[in-house]
Image (cartoon, rainbow, N blue to C red; front, side, top):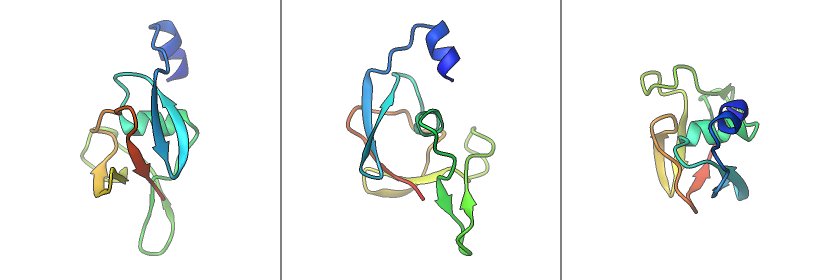
Length: 90
């Protein structure tokens, strides 16, 4: 993703807050893309506590469910980032 951003002149102009920490994102990124680019691979935990992360990245598998601005179970791969967005992931 970083190489794609560089090749297409995408600046990291947006800031989102993930688990209380600021994360830079580019306009047009999805929440999943911003999380992955920031080095996060665990988006949630299953009932047994095992880490789960994105699988299909097209909204079918629901492995990328996160809380966005207080709303639980949002598919991170389908939601575009917005400046100031607050994300909580496992």
